[in-house]
Length: 397
Length: 217
Image (tube, rainbow over all chains, first blue to last red; front, side, top):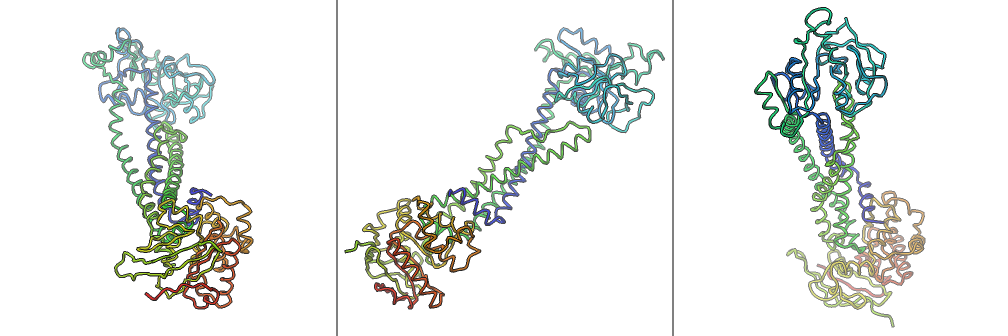
């Protein structure tokens, strides 16, 4: 027999009392767990998707919008830019690499991105089956896009205008799937990739049709840049923003700004979880104190049998700890069940998915936090149990 | 000649509550393995004296010694350990722990006293009290008589030197009263423990040759 065994048996005998505290602790931990896991995955994804991209160049407008559309494919781009302007950046000695992207269409919510093979290489994309595109109107699908659309190499599909479902379908031309990429854990997984020429083909008309296909009128949506040297960090954005019709936005800077904005909401949710944890602690303290009233004879008999005050103090604290840990474990399970549901919902909407099984580093300290809260809540009842006037209780029979 | 097990001298206890009456007891001694009845009406201080004998209450004046050592010489954990080793207590109500089955209730006493008993010792206690078939059952599933036996098993499993019983015959008919006393004597005799019974039940008097009468409050 151990004090832990004794505490667990006592809780089993009176399951109603700790249930509210377990439930409230579970809700608090679930909220914090889901929040931490989601935020951690979101930030990791943001960092991963922007890795290797120092600057995004596009049309003048909101820099955040430019980054969200050009790097994360989550928003509509402010506009298009002349290809010649993007190509001119290659000649800038501060620029190591330029990857132009042409956006505008989608297939079942998956964006069709006109890009060279360098874009696939940027994210370490490898073919799972088939081959990379060589000609306009050929396409390679990211892993999630392939799973979501069910397309395989050799299949054909029609793109729709716009960046979400419901746009005008380009019935006149179809893409041919030449390959499917292996999962990369990056934005590439959600995209359908094709040569930039395909996008021009769909929107500017056919090359042989008219002059719209002339080089001077070609446009791209954004250009992703990699700096040639650290000096570019300070010079290049200012140079581009002041001396051209283009806008340059730093993904790192814009995402830091976005995180600050989102941070307020995250902090509010964390405060709510903290309030729930406090309520759970109050429920625990009240419940344990109420139980002590019914257990006072049992505790007095334990003293008579040789239990010290410290033993009674410890036994009540162990009960509190068991309640806190049970709540924490239930909360972690609940939080990740919520992420599982969120995952299914996001996947059906073609949005970046979250892994229900991902645990953020801080999340693993939640059981310790719940344990600490429950121990603090158990201090007063434990002290009362230890200080009971045993003689008076037993003398009263 | 038997060794002295209990010695009470000049016992007076005054509760902090100003309205409570002062409890006083005449001096008495109990030899090793002896039997003594604390007799008195309700409120006379029988239970208070039992608590002092168990070392759970320090009298305002006087001394209470077990095996020649005053409880005042022990404090905190040392007193708790001594109580677990020397004293067995049978409360008026069984007060078994609801979440533990009967065997676990009895083993709890072994655990709290910190004196590991051989398996055979626990089993013998169960056999002696005729509760072996009840070992796996929970208190709520037992009759009051069975609960009393389980409480007695819990009190004697550590083979205490002194067994204290508080109103063991309260609300029992004559036959049950006699049976309860027989059982207490038998068990105390089996383990060689002294026995002090606190009771206001006049039927009990005839069973004890040594009596200490406490006055009305």
